Amino acid sequence: MTTIGYIYADNKLLPEDRVFLNLAREKNIKVILFPAARFLNLAKVKNLGRKCAVVLNNSAERESMEIAKVIESVGTPIVDPTRSLYYFEDKWMFYVHCKKYNIPTPETYLLPIAIGQCYTPIERLIKKSGAVIIKNIFSDNGQFVDRAKTVKQAIEMIKKFRKGERAPLIAQEFIKAAHKVYRVMVLDGKVVQGIIKKSKSWKCTGRFTKGDAPSFHVTPKLEKMCVKISKILHIPWCGIDLMRKNREWIAIEANSSPGMDFIAGDIENLYKQLLKYLLSISEKWWKL
Image 1 (cartoon, rainbow, N blue to C red):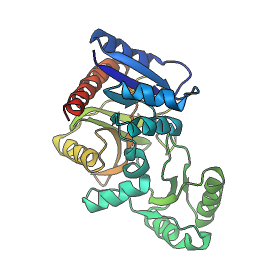
Image 2: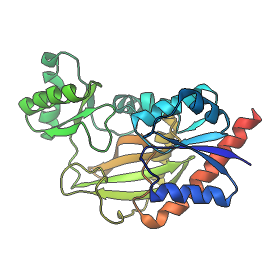
Image 3: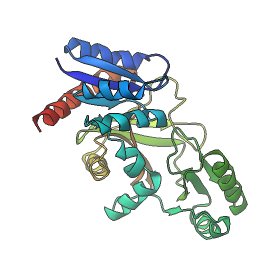
Image 4: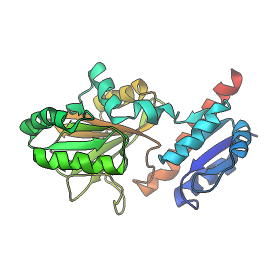
């Protein structure tokens, strides 16, 4: 019997967690749970981690990442690998890699520690697009992300963000997106879903979307671009956020452990594909 680990963040299992567990049960797969919201003894995590052929980290919370790193330390593969968050998913490194591989992305600057040195990139971006986005490099669900239309607003924003979270900040070109962002999910080198996140404000996280998100057709050209992003970032299971600028696709960011619940009717099929991928990883790992 194959054993798979499952890291989740909430105090109790959510409906989509149960979809995954039921699918695993149908295939006679044993699942060991790692709830990040509860106290977990280090020795126990290591011991249980060794029993797993592969572990799915279905949470983007920092505590979940620490549990995942412990499991990686005993030699068990994690999907997605923790390096994806601490290196490739970093919003600044996302920009660096996109520029390296000629993937269209908003103009971005890493903001220096000295406030006085932040004025030049901010002024440049406001002049270019009428506003600037200030963003924490580890931002998630729209937290520590905001828009400023003046240099003064941007500087106050930087001071505010640095009080709440000391991770580095970037200044990013503002893309006028008509209150929508496109999300493409890639799994194991293939696009498995394309949805549109809509919002009444300029920020579109999808976090508070009611009902199903609209789907959209991912063209072969866009699929090639998204698969390329997944490969160069070493994030085999990811959600890529994109916008349109002058009819061109612009890559905004990539997220590991992407949300699977944008369309209720897709959840089971997506988890079936994810489970198939996890089994392929476990088979490769144990052959080594």
